[in-house]
Length: 550
Ligand SMILES: [Zn+2]
Image 1 (tube, rainbow, N blue to C red):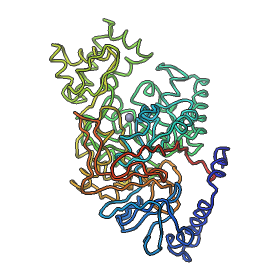
Image 2 (spheres, protein in one colour):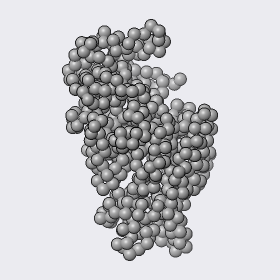
Image 3 (cartoon, rainbow, N blue to C red):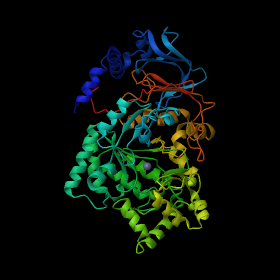
Image 4 (cartoon, rainbow, N blue to C red):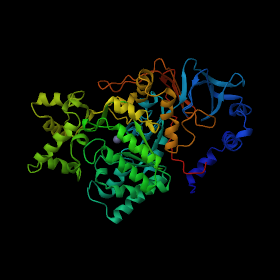
């Protein structure tokens, strides 16, 4: 096992009595099962004064266990007590009355696009997430990450962030920095350079390697290239997180794409995680059953395959990404623009885009969420592509090309069925992940919506399972140490919400409305949402994957 200087530093920083005590308690729990007494009682022998006590709530611990009545005590940045505080005569500086409310671990979101907010000091509180009860977000997904990662994480830590944040090292960014937007295979030297960038990212604390094999330039990589790079992440205990090559019928098809993910896991000997798993478009509707079968078979054979999912029938992406064939993007934007205007290429481009539009469900299924570019027409936002095309008296693809030429647009693409969503959600290896991006309601609503709609209204899964899939399971899948569970010794990322009122309020028309029902959010022991209001705390930390040591 390699011990890095950072961790030695961390160890020394945190080496106060509570840490040592908790470590000893954990050791005893693990090795002296027969002799063990209840952990809370043992903790309370040492702790008489807490910073915060959350009293009287219905506790769901994140491990999948049913709700129990219990109080949660916080001292410093850790949970130090779970049990009956009155019986132990515990005092606290602050008591939060959680009577009639659910107390749960803060949610850990394994797939976000919160990068932009977090790196902007004005939006770094990450309120879209905090208000949902999310206390940790992952960034660097879909193959796009900051390079070098260590510097970026340090920047976030010193600037202050509302939630914890961890990152992947992105294959697309690594490839682009070595090969630009080339669609060629890497030379041996280029591959070595890419490997060393992945290694650097991992050493900087990345959770693993992310890819966006659907997007350019990730799509230009053959499976073998990805395997070689995934091996580097595997050597350092990382996870392979992917926006897979095809969620639909664009290229190799959904099922073959899942087989590719499994092959990468098997050959690189790395746990693989399929982000925002879905069956996209009419061609593959109903294939969730087959997809689940393929994944279950691989899991039975020892490949560690997991996934995350958001509870919406529309995906969120770029107009270019959804309609342009990838060959049209080779070489970068200037090359794309040349191809669009090249009379020798344009007809073929349009023909393929017509196919892609059909795959997506037609022009009415694409809703413009945002526009980019200096001369962009902002009145398009909130309109469907067919409506815009009609007002211009042009075809849908022609209109899309005009928008792309102006700088492009973000779209909500209505392309999933509820039955596929529910089928994936029920799988024990499917976690929650918002894929939150600007303009799509999932950024402000994923977690409350999953509880309101899929747990309470439709009973697709239970509340303890929803919470497990949104906390401890994510922490364990991605090797986040001491997070995701309400238990002594875990970091105090704690939420309190009202089951009667929790709900998403963001919609496709008004995507930036905060969710309701989350009353308290504690991040690393600090109260960030208090009685439903943001306190101004930026108690989040830049988390680095545990690589051993403390
Ligand atoms: Zn993605």
